[in-house]
Image (cartoon, rainbow, N blue to C red; front, top):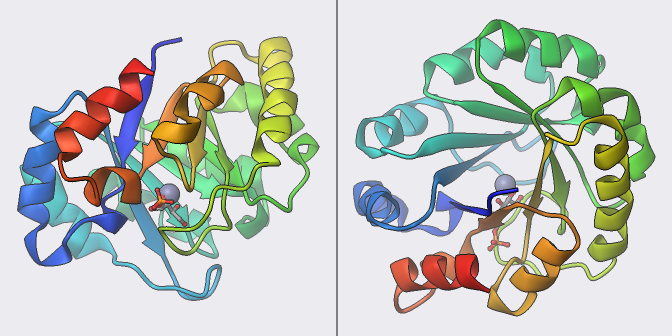
Length: 216
Ligand code: DX5
Ligand code: ZN
């Protein structure tokens, strides 16, 4: 499957998101990753719809939105209207994951489902053939700049096996602590979409870093 980098603007300078969008526009990244946190599902609050709408105005890449919120079913339409082209919700946050999947499909956008590192991969089994992407969190959702959890490779292997069996077209995304040091190993274990926040935005040359992350 094609390798994709999705730079997470959580690590960008929020006083100049236009510059962050322009950097991504001129880079080899195909996607932009937007992290929405509600202070309830995760202990942190990031930003919401007005910021997403501002990003949409300046961004030419595929808008990949990761929602870390309770009651995802309530906000699907708002996220789609604000520009989400892929909406990834947490299995743990949904009372009825299938309902959320159906609501996202109704908006005509792509669907992703995700789990934190302490949730067994097997819980995803009933949903793998219903979604376009599974996001395997390699840190606990809530903050950028955390250390990559090494156990994620074994979880990726398990997920890759399920995806091959149930829905070979399903993309596998990894998010948290992704950098030049682990990118090749993540691709080798079946990931094809890498979210990269700090490693891109704290790099001296973010465009160059995105190129490197694709080349490894
Ligand atoms: C964390 C977010 C990530 C975050 C990744 O909850 O989902 O997308 O921005 O940041 P880094 O790449 O710095 O670990
Ligand atoms: Zn994320």
